Structure formats: C-alpha cells, structure tokens
Image (cartoon, rainbow, N blue to C red; front, side):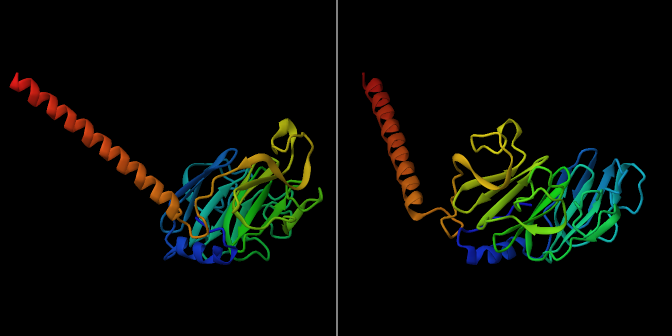
Length: 271
C-alpha cells in the first residue's frame, strides 16, 4: 500500500493518518515463493497455494488451489509475502505474521511455525511493511525502521549477524519514507532522496561500489531519487510556474502557426 510523506519528520504520522482515511483498505496482492495473498477493500486477507508451513494462515497445512480466508484477521491495510511466511499491517499500526518461523521471521519471540496470524512483539505505529526470504522490515510513523528474522548476511541492519525473533532497530537510519526487502538484503529510501542498503552484497546488490556484506546501512553511490514533496507533499510554486510558462509558449506557438495557415489559405483564394 503506497503512502506519501513530507520530508518534515514531524508531519510523517499526520500524512500517514490522512492516507489511511476511514480505514478502508486499498486492494492489493502479494506473491511469495509458492503462495499468494490478496487484500480486499473490506480489510480481510485471502490466500492460496503452497501451505507446508501454514503460510496461508487458515489454521491448516493443506495446500489450497482456491483462495481461503486468513483466520481472525480484519482491518488490514497492507500485506507482504516472504518465501514461506506472510505479514500484514492493520489500521491500528500493529503487525501480524504467520507461516514459517525457523529463524524468527514472525517476530513473536519464538521459532515456532504459526498456522494462523500472531502479533509481532512490541511493534506499534507502523505505516509500511516488507517481507523478504526469511526476514521482515517495518517502517514506523517517526521514520525509523525495525527488522526481525534471519540475519546471516546482516540484512537486519543491527550491526550483527545474529537472528532475531523480535524486532530490533535498524542502526543509524532515520527519515525513512519507503522500504523494500530482497532475498537477503534490505533497502530504504530517505526523505532527502538518498537510498540506503545493507545485508548480502553478492554481485554488488548494495550499490556501494563493493561486494562486501554490510551489517549496517550504507548509502548507494551517486544516487538521489527525486523527491517532489518539498516538505508539503506537493510541487513547489517555482516548478508550477515553469510548467505554466512552457504551456503558454506552446499555446502561443500553436496560435501563430494556425494564423499563418489561415492567412495562406486566404491569399490562395484571392489568387
């Protein structure tokens, strides 16, 4: 589910509350390794496919070739699917997870698989989620991030390679507006347009000019993603004026060309 934030950290939560509106979910889909999820506008979640670890959340481990309702989960506004686990964000800012939990990727303080959703421990005020292979990220309304699950390559960003069965804060990263998770690495976009990455760096996937794994976030080299919010969530007046000026020039040019054409036709008729 997309959110739009200003680059003034004090306004992030207000913007998120506005995006949530009356709590009506934006329909969405998410695909894991062998299972799929769908979020309906009424805030319910449906799942189908492979269910060996309970990743469908229907209380069983039976595969499903048609969608089944994820048990006891309502008021959901965002979903994400990992390899064999699933994550959902509710409108009250809590996060719920189910399925495979061998490396703590459900964040409930255990390594026990769950066939129905359980609440991620001590996690509130969340506005975005992303599930990777065996780890997950959550973005809070204050622009900070938390991570949990498998951490063999430092993909949790807490400066260690220790797995975590409860959320830990991603080190030294604030002002975040968007997140995404890969197989064993993680990405964050900050309000200043910079992009940060950490975890497995095989083939240079962290974009820092090396192939060295990173246990804490590093900035992607020479990359600034344009941010049109300018602190208010809208384009600046200078940019708007520039656009209007260009439109005026185009209109004038069209009028002039049309006038020339009409004059030419008039002269041809006189001859």
